[in-house]
Image 1 (cartoon, rainbow, N blue to C red):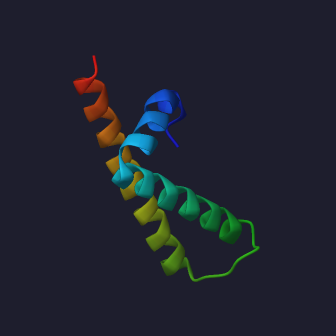
Image 2: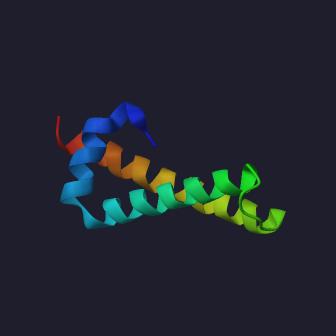
Image 3: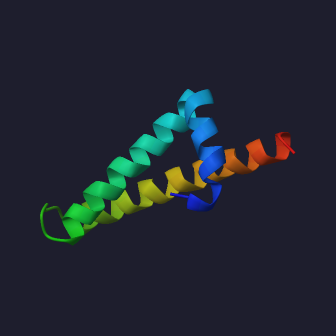
Length: 74
C-alpha cells in the first residue's frame, strides 16, 4: 500500500500505533480479498464488496496521515 511513500510509512508504523493498526488491517483485508477472488476462500458478493470498501477507507485514512506527516516534516 502506498509504495511511493515507503520511508514515511516505515516511520509512521513505528511512531504511530493507530497508523500501524490501520496498515495491518489493510494488509489483512488485501490478503483475504485476494483469497476470495482467486477462489481459495468463499463469501457472498455483498460481503466481499463490504471488505473492499473497508480496505479503501483504511487506505484513504492512511494516505491522509501520510500527507499530514509530510506537511509537518518539510
